[in-house]
Amino acid sequence: MSTAGAAGRTRPAWKVWAVVAAVVVVVAGLLHAWRNTNVLTADRLCGGLVPAEQAEAVLPGAGRLDAEGDGLDDDLTDTVCRVSKSSVLPGSGKSELTVRVWAEQGDGLLGVEHLLDLPRTSFFSGAVTGGVDTRQAWALLPEKCWTRKQPVIVRVSTTGPITDRAAFAAFTTGTARSVAAAAHCGDLPEKPGPLVPPVSDEARPVSEGRVCGLDGVSVRGRVPEGTKVLEQGQKAPAGLWSCSLFLDDDSSGIVRADGFMTYTASRDPLFTAAVRKAPGTTRGKAPDGRAAEVVNTQKMILPCAQGDPLYLAMRPGMQYLEAREAAGLPTTDDYFARFTEAAAETFGCAAPATG
Image 1 (cartoon, helix red, strand yellow):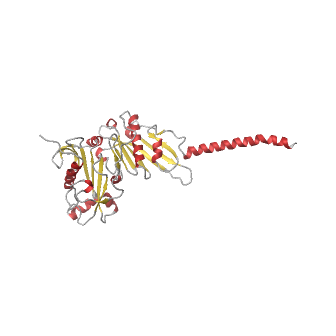
Image 2 (spheres, helix red, strand yellow):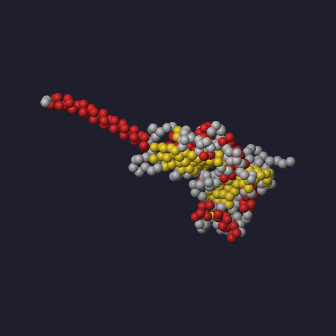
Image 3 (cartoon, one colour):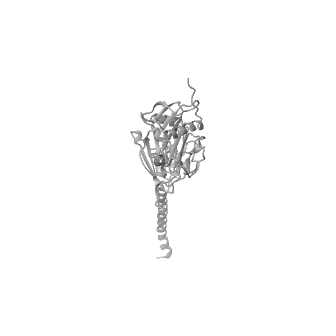
């Protein structure tokens, strides 16, 4: 047998192996793209409700997006969607977010149930209303989406902290827009308005006579003598606003975290409409004597001479409750009356003319 003949017979075998190797490379590349990237992922997840590109921007790390959820439930408020990002690459972790369509009392939206860290929350209002912190976000759906008794929100929670709040707010708004469109109950913009962030990342000393940026609000004689007071929240006025006071004392961890007093305010019309659905809301009077819609003695909607009404609320914290008797502190009604007067001026809500 000649050498040339043997070589001729081996060439096809080399070609076969070359083709096999090429196929292996292509398959490996496709497997990598499928398991570790989103090249092969659909543009929208969970029955079209969740924009994949925005979910990719929110969830930290690299990897493939996987989703559980088939779109809107027959009962809108039973809708749930989970999106996770994971990779088989060494050192890669897993991150996850959960989207829920949720009915909630309007006066509870600025509370710990939806934003775990209210003083560190960034709010947005106007064409779409909501808020975002490092782990949770919510956006109000249009009124036509609400139940007979409660407003409805899109609520997003994550398993780990989110560093890009703008992306988180955009994702929440985009998902709320998809939910409203799928339910045929209204229109929302693709993106939220400008975020109103906290003034500082950490609580800072109050300015005497201008606590929480409200002219005329003082802590003198209203906290235990000699105690340093810190504040944290957004700059007033704003469409949605909150400010919490903390005593810099030796309070235990849970008491200190709950703070001394938390104030909230809003002139966002959709948020005010949500509050009006709170059970027990009646006609009454504000501390300054003007007519008001009263949810309870520390939650009210005040009419304004011009523009939208002003919602005001106050919640005493555990630091106040522990110190009030021993330090002889004023009643909560006294704190709320002073807050109402200062907030009405700061938020431009003069009392309407009577008579």
